[in-house]
Image (cartoon, rainbow, N blue to C red):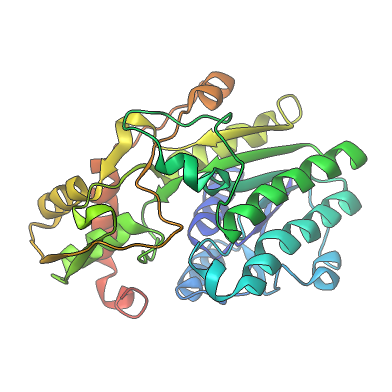
Length: 333
């Protein structure tokens, strides 16, 4: 089998590439990544050690993508995943998250490849998400109307584009709407990778902020470990000829839902450090106070469920950071 992983030097893509390289010993695993992100050079080094070739190509450049070898499967992880970038650089968000999908679909059509697409929980309505009460689990039928950020719009549009190409050109696809993913090799920032950011700040005794919704740290998200994502996608790859052409929500679920306030407690426990935490009451219009995934559909399809709990995730991140602390100082603020 020949597999291309787009965004292969990012957090999700690099972990997937290494996972498949180690488990599919006879498979050809290649990466596509323009190396524009901070930290991608570190992941490139990890791929090289395992003889995974990276093509330094921007996903918006179809001429370059068209010239790549043929692949049986493309796993599309490439994304400008920050919703805040939607306000600062809309062209980048469109080129990466929508034009990029279009280019990959043209490549799938040309090669008769299957496609696994990593979409986002951001396809759902901000207004409706803000109205939710705690303990509500979000499934695939949740409201997708109305504003969802430009990033979310591009992901949602990409989903529909995939369905159109599948109808016209018989492309077999799977769309995974993923929430918060975390684990080793994630260079956490304020608006993505918040678990890694929290552990790093505690490890280095640096100040943190609870931002928005009263500034109390009451926001809740469910978190899934990257290894659980890799396990699921392996199952999807193995069964794609018989189970395909659907959308599923994927996340840590109810057992892995955590508030920032409780993440602070766990980070203190894992690092044995305390930090000062300040409050900012105002937040972005894109921000939401609550999101917890309903995994019912994907669990029933694959007999899969997340294994790693939130404590496991923070401990794995902490161990990785301790082993790589000097190097990571260049890449994590």
